[in-house]
Length: 119
Picture 1 (cartoon, one colour):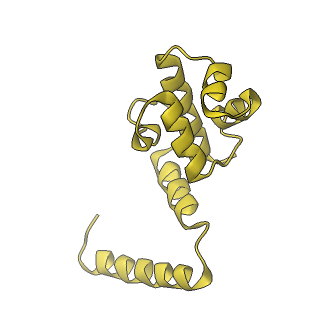
Picture 2 (cartoon, helix red, strand yellow):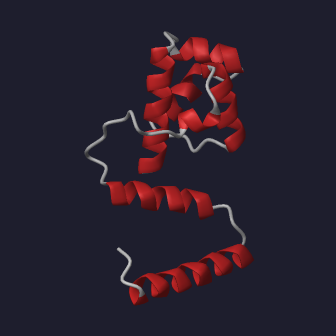
């Protein structure tokens, strides 16, 4: 289970509880199963962007609120691991050409940082 999925799920849980909704009530609002919502909140489900939008609508928030982790305190997940997980999830669906471009970009960026002492 991905640390990123855990963060998204925890944030959804916090937003849902803040609105006084049960998992079942949220599920009814957006035409999903309560068990699915539970899996999302536990970080066991890798939701699509469309499902993320659906959940945001059900919570009456913008999708970026679902991905705002400022209010979550999960000290057991190191910040570096969170960043790596987010990056991995962003590039996971890219095709080979896009991945080659991303790799070349990261290589060039890494060299730039090294040569310019940016830290």
